[in-house]
Each structure stands twice: as C-alpha cells, then as structure tokens.
Image 1 (cartoon, rainbow, N blue to C red):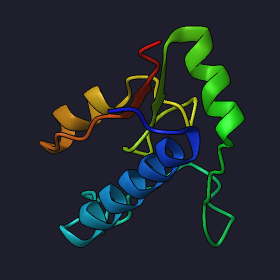
Image 2: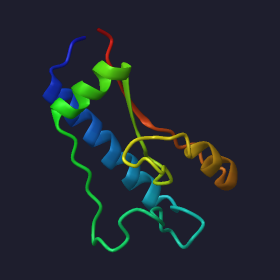
Image 3: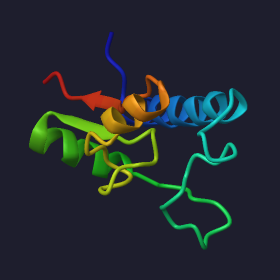
Image 4: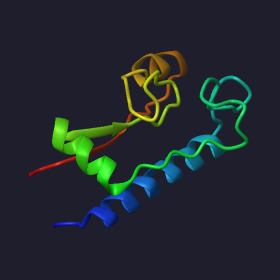
Length: 103
C-alpha cells in the first residue's frame, strides 16, 4: 500500500498524539504523572512541527526517521535510544515512532 507524503505525516502526528494521550491518562511517569521533565519546560505546550520535506530529507539520508515518544531523548524530537533506560527504570515499554523509506 502506497501513501503520499501528507498521509505519512498525518499518520505520524496522529500516532504521537495518541501515544502521549494514552501514556498520560494511564499513569504517566513516576514523578506525579508528568512525562516531560526536561524539554522546553518554560513553554506552556511543546509542539514539534516536521514538514513533509523534513521527513523526506531525513528518510532519504538514513532510510528512517525515528521520533522520540518517551520525552527522554537528548536529540528530541528525534530518538536517541533513551527509552531503553526509561523502560528499565519504570517498567514501561515505550519506543520511538519510526518512519521508514522503503524506496
């Protein structure tokens, strides 16, 4: 099944939003339910915008774009594998949103 670039981005954004909602409503982190303890804390809302061109460029360079869903990555919004430590500490099973280029 082939998707156009706008559909891929829409699916990615929906997945990120859904994962964040589920995570937050099912207990969040061990620190009183707050998931994000580091990134743009002075901002009332952290919203990451990736254009279709950015996603295409990223996936053309490395064949995948892995977006952080644990809020622990030092390369946020991209994944740096920090979810591994987070999962061991919390018993969680969160992982990145991976968009891959099959071409």
